[in-house]
Length: 125
Image (cartoon, rainbow, N blue to C red):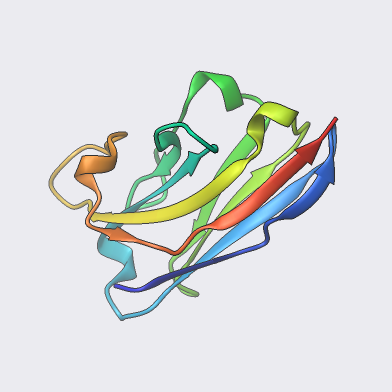
């Protein structure tokens, strides 16, 4: 599966952005979809995941209550709504996919076989 992110940009602290990830292929519905981010000089970290059926989500603690992940299996897309953005949310955000059927959603980068090219989110103070 090929993944293409969009929606990044520059926003002031407290603002909102909506990231989208478009997936190619006809088997999107079997993939758990995750969002990860990588700040300058830091390791890539888990942000959120939604399972293949779309009925289970998980978030890293720092974004709980501010970010919301969703998917549309009919359109092969997954989105990340980001509200109340903080300067520490500044990073390149990556969409990732792994086969989800038969397992629980995972939060490690090592569990994801497919990655997008990333989209930069910059939050100014």
